[in-house]
View 1 (tube, rainbow, N blue to C red):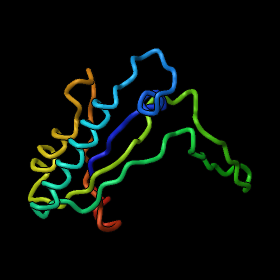
View 2: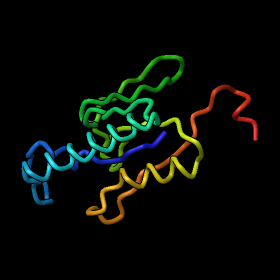
View 3: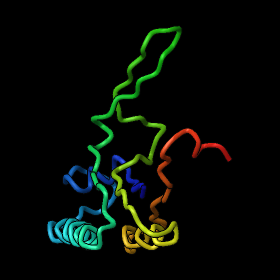
View 4: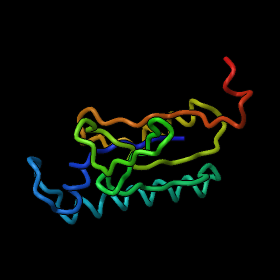
Length: 130
């Protein structure tokens, strides 16, 4: 699973809300969506794509905890959290190295410090033992 990260500010930039960052142009947004569509289509054609989804912006999130046996629900966004999971891509491929190679194509080279994480999906509890 390739985990893609963002922030509420990233979603704000995409939707044209005021931030301290420059707005993305319609052309830049369209190019980003086109890149993701083309990249995922190539993975589908190679038979490596299992699933890919974007997640809604953090302002629509809820955090659920249990305190003293009762659920405690907090609506997002969470000011202490800058980075959130923005989406994921699941691939079925020959090796972890291939998954890492695929992941590199999902990092925006124009975003300094941008990254994604690659983590194997476990099939069962036996995969969690050392």
